[in-house]
Amino acid sequence: MADLVKTFFKAARLARKGRPISAALAMSDSVTPSVRPARKRAKKAKQASPRKTVPVLPRPAPGSFITQEFRCKHGTLAYKFYTPHGSARRRMPLVVMLHGCSQSAADFAAGTGMNALADELGFLVLYPQQSQRANLARCWNWHNPAHQKRGRGEPAVIAALTRHAMALGRANPARIYVAGLSAGGAEAAILAAAYPDIFVAVGIHSGVAHEDVQSLQGAIAAMRGDTRPRPTGKVRRPLPTIVFHGDHDRVVHPSNAGAFLRDLERSNPGQLVTKSVSGRSQGGREFTRRIHRSMAGTVLLEDWTVHGGGHGWSGGRGGSFTDPAGPDASRAMLDFFLAIRRRP
Image (tube, rainbow, N blue to C red; front, side):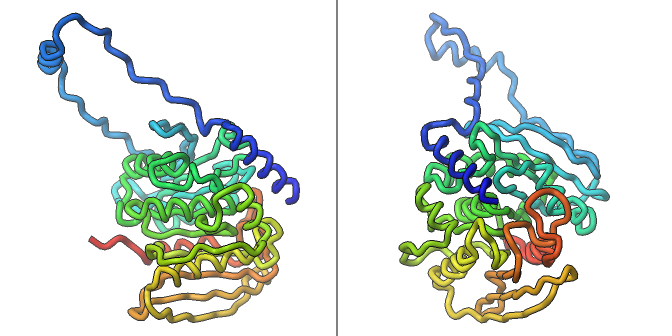
């Protein structure tokens, strides 16, 4: 685990030295300049060119797990996309899953078991994959201010890819969710804040609240749990959020989980009603689950502390960075997500 942290910091330093996020996109075919006046050129082009139509993408077959590459003006990402069985006609929810450092889309799919859950509950799954060109350790660059805002950097690419996946899978636009582990969890928090018009809820496993970090030094402090100044002032109410964190995490300090409650309190939603439940997973791990509701009864935040859990997806069986003994984070997140939809 220490090697992973060192690799992350090395990759982050390389990114700060100007390593690009992705290959530059080629410009569209240019038209050779003409000596005719611009008005005549435009008129002739209008008469000669047929109206362009947006092609309808063929929906992947039920049960298919495809691998593709997506390009837009902000960059390029490889991705995997799962279409569950029995999905030929329904408009289903879409869950965007963001892997952690050193992981791949396939690895994360195996570790979280989301595809099997998609077959059971009926939802599409998108797995964007960070490139080693963008980050040597395949970490999302969540600590860099150039990748923390709407319309810029990695959030813009992932948002565009999400829209592409929505069209590809004929997803229900009122039920689009995002979740991630570690660096992917921090990236999910950024996307939820930057694109509330796309996503309706967010799941963060062993991640960091993005407003706490604006530099590599800030990332180091956050991951270690060092005391540092917290943002102050009122903020927009966060999307409904579910958080998982192991209290024995040695990579991202467990204190980071509390930042999401502080953000909720800063948004000034009024008094919160909190219910705490303790339990034990089938694998023998104890956990504490806290549900924070508004006075009207709306669930705003659900946070799970996995006692004895380390830096891995709780309940995951396979892949890397998983904790098979922990409560099932995948199912808990889907139970949370599927109860929430965007209202007209």
